[in-house]
Length: 521
Image 1 (cartoon, helix red, strand yellow):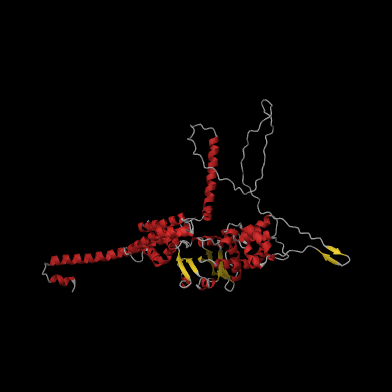
Image 2 (cartoon, rainbow, N blue to C red):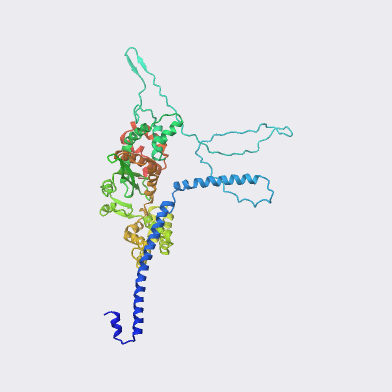
């Protein structure tokens, strides 16, 4: 029965019936408009969040805290402009002012001392005369003023000329000479340090081979990129046994980080490129094992690739929410989830609309990270006790708060998606606090991948799957060397010189791992 029929039962005056019908229609319109308004607010919130994320990707830093190497790119011009302005200001102040002098300048912080390990070349500057210009007596040294300037010698090419005299025995009719030592490239013109320099320039400094060719050309040294490419290929093959052994050492740990990044691979059949992936694995940062970084080049992003790499391995794996890892978990491999990924969603939401709920989530996560900072240098046992006493109660309180807050948030809103992400992964997110040697996030592997992501803009694509795998070998060793504090060029040059005659039984001695770290493994 509709409202009009219900009204006729009361025998009301026609004017009153019409008024009541108008009120009912208006109430229905209000209900409809409220529902439309609620839906519009959800859509607007989602769009504002998406636009903010896109703006950050287009104009902002790639994460909430810019990496040091990215900051340098933006800070270079700022530092240059600041120095120029200060120089102009100092020049103006040296000119006698006609107006009253300005207030005293705030004292500037002193510049940092130049590194102590650098070679010092002394230049002594004595005065033209050691006698007094007024009375003629000898001057007495009372001190000295010392200043230092940083200088550099650019890449300097030189030639090792090896002379091996030949000696003959007239009676035996034999000829003898010093043997030619084995080399990575037999009969090649490149010394180990030149090979190392080309390799490090390409994979650490991200210089394409044609730019290295141009650098050499400025010194009138022909270094064709085709020759360099051949060197890089041979080096990748020669270093493969070291990388294989490094993988074995990595798999000895019971906690690993894993992530992946796309790279382009040439597809000659189509004349285009196709997407391949560098799967990255890193050892745990919270135990005594040496830091090891491994890159595994594969033609795709399917879950079969980490399954093949980790076949037979047992332990805890720290990953993001990518579905390719899901088949690994259960049985011998447990899951640890990255709290930084969960935090990032609240950070983006807070940046978009200053959500107080997102701000509260950030504050709660911030307390957990503050505890990790305090426990950075303590033993595993002490860290476990701190997490049990302080982190676990905060995690339990945050979980209850998220559950209650989710009930008040409309489905489909950006805030709802952020909370759902945390709740869906909560057991894996909170699992780290049950031990003292499990990491809180996946930042260590993301930091290892970041140089690869920066370098991709320079080397563009891999020529083939085989080339990608050779590059992964070199990148694994150089990334591990840097993580262990080795200077990549020095380590690689020394290794390339020793490797041709090095016994396989002592291969661990060539790995880019500190001896004290290796002894603890």
